[in-house]
Image 1 (tube, rainbow, N blue to C red):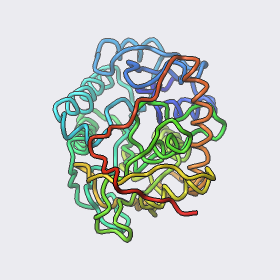
Image 2: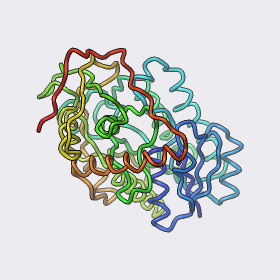
Image 3: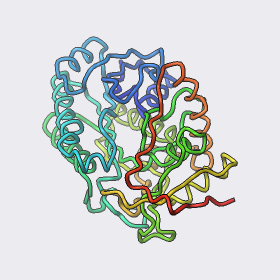
Image 4: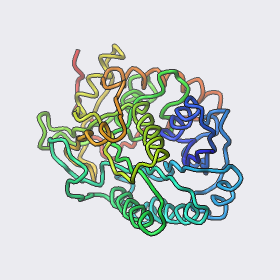
Length: 352
């Protein structure tokens, strides 16, 4: 049997493909390459360039490759962008997933794993949040993912589909073997941006808000290494294949770091200072979101291997150096950061 990975040319999806191949699975990738890269797909996987909203295409892939499981990553993920373009996010994340589910049900695919998000909780506070916490998304991005969770629940009840929805916290780092990493130009992930700045790909970076109700005034997030995240998906697939019931679970380390603590880590691992500037808050950013990951540990048997901020940063920095060579080979340029919110009269000095 074969696993269909949607968005498998993107950041997390490309890591998932390698994780499955390393485990001996057959893999087919469906990606329209809007933000992903053909070269990011492992050569042993079959790549189909197309849209997850194309019901006929998905159905044909399932039949041709005898797909027994779908792991769904394809979608839009930038919180501030979702605030300015909510309809685009509801189309790309919710409507197209509805079409994907129609194809899955039509072709009797028994197992489905969904890339959800901690954004469904909104600003959950400094205490680790459990899966049964109130769901109060504060951005169209979070709402679009929550609506998909509801669709999955109802579809499973009506058609016998069994699924796992994994609510990601802040995914970071890169494949420790250097095979893939976060490669999207103009990415907004904090560790990615900080590593680009440290390695000279950006002249400076911004901290969005220092007046949050947190110890140092900057947002706190639970940063999870991408390799630990995709391992949780592999375990979720094994659980479904063994007859496990549908499940929604958090994926995080149950502790967080502030923006300034992350910048300190990048400075420490990189060994040199870089230009950090203060900007205003971004719409949709919650002060703090930290996972309670007990359920994933209990139900999936998940045990993280990379729960160390400096290790996450080291793998991310290594990928930036590898990516620089790939970008030259493929003619990709990293765009300049958006200056509109910058307050250049203020600076943040990273710690020595």
